[in-house]
Length: 164
Image (cartoon, rainbow, N blue to C red; front, side, top):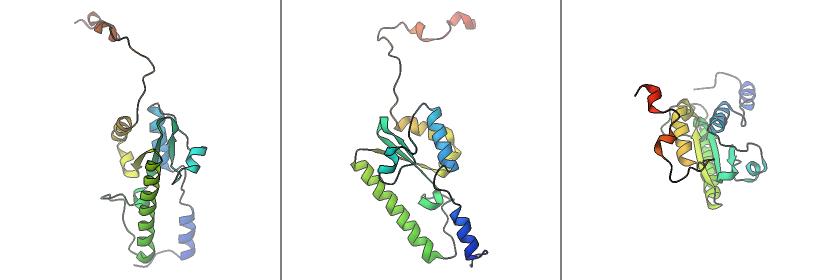
């Protein structure tokens, strides 16, 4: 099936596809920030690490890649379609993308970094992504509770305030 627009126009359209500050990246960064994590986006860590991770959390020695399902070939995802035209171009391109992702993730893990991948389609369910991030990233409590504390002191209001 031939492309419905000219090569020149297709080239112009593709040149407008952003690689930084995409909507999925902004959503993921906002979610991480709201969960209390602090990170770098364009800091020195990001540019020196293999694959130039989208988000780096140096304190937790963790990097986060926010992958578009189409470009990075999310397995079993309906967004990861393959164009019908020009498959001689697209199939090798997708294979190279996936192989490069695998190489970069392996290099980061060998260097002692924890690697997380957030897929574009996962961001439709922010609660699930938040639960996964909380589960996979270490959390620190700012306050130490005394070991011997009376349990009734752990609630904000006493039972009688609710008529119990």
